[in-house]
Amino acid sequence: MNEIIPAKLHLGDKTLLSDVIPAGTAGIGDWAYAHCSSLKWLAMPVSVQDIGKEVFIGCPGLKHIFVYDTPEFTAGSLPDDKDAPVYMASRLNALAMQEFSDPLKALICGAGNRSLNRWDEECLKYLSVPDEHGFDPFLAGGEEDYGDHDDQLKQHIHVRRLCKANIIYTRLLSNITAGFPLSPEAESVYLALFRENPAAIALLDEIGSHYTQAADIYAKAGLLTTEALPSILSSLKPDRIEIRSALIGRERDSVLSSLAL
Image (cartoon, rainbow, N blue to C red):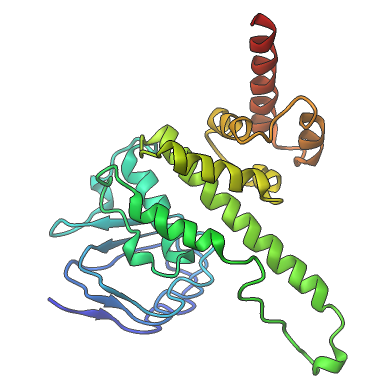
């Protein structure tokens, strides 16, 4: 089999929740899943060797892309444990497919071979791209009538920074929860980029699980300190009780540990 998923096959299908690309498929056409706003997960075979333009643009809910090398894929074969490596691999795959310039080099099959060197290489390439990249101002009535160019640019930069922060955070989390290895050198680079990212604190409002591990990551990056904690807590939405508690507990433990030395 050497089939291609046709261009625009599911374009704008807001009812599509998930999809399994058949084994043996060789490529995915342009905009095949673009603006499928309800799409949550997708499975694709390792046979896919070509990805079209903006295949997953406008898919904000797409959090998992499972890459398989078996004759067929069924969601029922997935483990119940959402912390299993296969789920973290699928999260990293989704980020790669949506953001990296050459995602096929970074994809992780199944639970991975626990070597993410190519993923890290592609990730660092993505993180090195200036935050202004891709900004295309919308000129509704001609440039002479356009007054909020700066506001749109600021929003574009914020979204890019938030996306970068999420990618770094997810990679660091994969090392903790799934055991995906991270060399000391790579971890140092990721932590430094996370620490320097102005949107890292804003990301706390989007973290929906692994609160203790999140607090550990922020502390290790040097963002969670006694001095910074009040400002961080005040920036959180009122209903962010779990992450607020984890941050307070992590900083309390850090203080107690330092006093014991």
